[in-house]
Length: 384
Image (cartoon, rainbow, N blue to C red; front, side, top):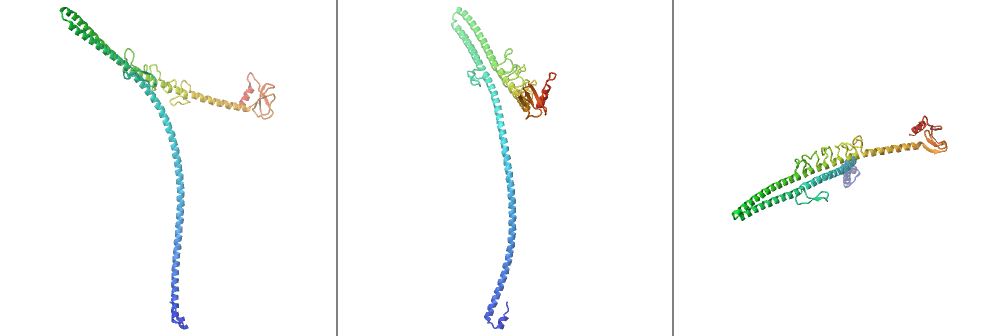
């Protein structure tokens, strides 16, 4: 507390002295409060500096994260482009696969039509007219005609047996006297003979039916003499395969010869690679199993594509040679050129009717020596 000795010595009242003392105490309290506020302000300043440092750190981290995000975006774009390229490649490969599948499907359809037509010719149901795969050819199968033969034979046999039975019954009915018995016996014998004949005919008809069936569908050997069935000649069988060859083999076989004379199928000659004379496809594109243009097809000869490319190359070479010659040949005239020419150029002088070449300083006439035009050879060599 502030001293009050001043007020005592000067005679100041006690009230004024007390008021002054209170003011001094208030000032002291305000000073303490100010010091406390200053300390708090210093602390706040320190905290603000720390917050600023943290904010700068966050800013740097944010910038780094932004750079990383940009790099990630670039990587994602590169991956997206690579994926698009892979998708395009996959689409191209899918289109190639679809084209190959279409070609294979066409070949399978052709083969199936040949087999189906052969089957119709041999085994189509009796009394059922067929139409071949070309959409216009119609007819009945071998089985149909076999069935008709068997039915007719059976009907004939049954009629003969019935006739014989009727004859026996009639003979028995009319035998009423001794004289008639002899006649009846003769009729009976005749009827027995007819019945035997009918049985024989029935047996023959059955044999014919069996033979008809064999002519239609037998595939395990000959039917009669050296001939084979319709089915064997259509789709193959013992004795036909590798000998005369079936219709099917002549059409589509590509794994060897069709008959005993070492001939191949239509398909093999069209696009196969087994025969030594070359298929149509090889003669068109190139030899070997891969139809390579640079591979000979047969007998040292190459495909049409090979010779076409060779002709194109020769034409290009000839065009180049002509261009080279035209670059040095200056044409013709009544006097030698005096400008615009260089060493090796060629010119035909119509006054002396001689071909000349320029040697770098003068025009030299090309003269024949011992029958050979040496100068011309030199000029052409220079030109080419």
